[in-house]
Image (cartoon, rainbow, N blue to C red; front, top):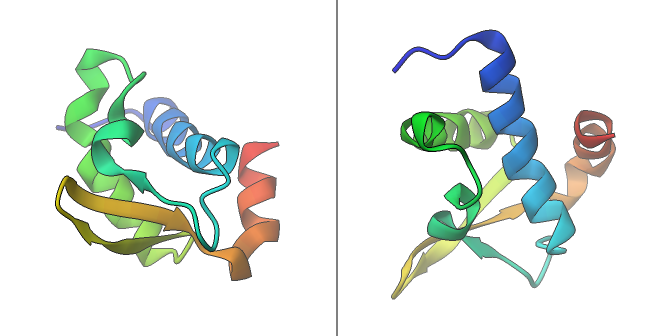
Length: 87
């Protein structure tokens, strides 16, 4: 699925904002399923690609695999970049 630049940035910002709002830094984390909730249905298919991109940029790290699925958290070392993206 090919996204427009605006949709891509919107999705990226949504995921990072959701992790930030839930304080998913050191101890906290969110499941991939929770990150994709609240996203319009036509954009949900691109969530995996955007998460992989955020991992490559080292803004988001894989917390680990839980019995409910993969969980993610923000990279505390990149907090300034994260806040610049959100605000």
